[in-house]
Amino acid sequence: MKKKYLNVAFYKFVRLSNYTSYQSKILNFCIERNIKGTILLAEEGINGAAAGTKKNIYELLNFLKIDNKFSDIGHKESYSEEIPFHRMRVKLKKEIVSLGQPNINPCERSGIRVDPKNWNILLADPDVVLVDTRNDYEYQIGTFKNAISPKTTNFREFPAFIKEKLNTKKNKKIAIFCTGGIRCEKASSYMLSKGFENVYQLNGGILKYIEEIETDKSLWEGECFVFDSRVAVDSELAEGNYEQCYACRRPLSEQDLLSNLYQKGVSCPYCINETSDAQRASFRERQHQVELAEKRNEKHIGIRIN
Image 1: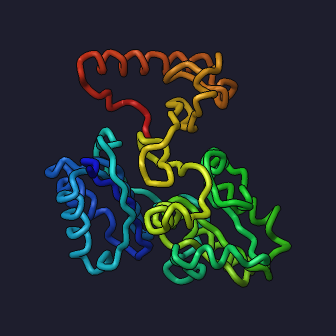
Image 2: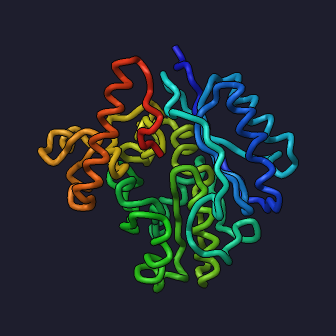
């Protein structure tokens, strides 16, 4: 039996000189249909993740495609028992994915897109250098075998990784991947601008790969971190086995949850030394409000979910 709610992730790099005009239209459309999630708008395009009934989500996708700028927008699908977002937000941003390199334009130039059905063939080439463009906490819970982690805490650190670790490999075949494809789009555009000659990117990202490739043929290992309350999805795109620290957003294993440094909603082994006493006091009060809301069978919308 199929789960009740459809989750979609989508993006499109396209010049939107009037991007602010889309905000209220999209927000109102979603609210009217009880669709929840986050959609980012910037001059460089749109980036979104949303969930609702299949009917309503398809209505949203069709609504976007009415505009010629989004007519060919692709998306990734997965299902869940509950909507993994607490509200609907449509936000105006400087970038739809933050690399901090304003001169990079994926609309003009990006890497060679490799569809999931051809990804395994590319990785079989022993000369390919495989790079995970995601952050270290995402890499730790799942990745492709032999993938290099940039060991970043946010995507803005990726250019420094390129300079320090990959600069001598400009003539190599570089294969990169990310959750849904958007970070690769920008990363490959940046790498090409720095003289890399052969950059390949997994089209649609890990989510599309898991969606299309049968488990017995898949080279994916572990779970894939997602930016909603599911925390991660497994090889069947079902909700994974990780919880999330709402202080630092990192995924937590069963072992992490048993640590004496873990306090629900307040701290975990990874962030205990990154926050002040005042911050932890604030997190503790927030968690208290969350628990009070749960007793009333309500959701506390102030909880920190990506």
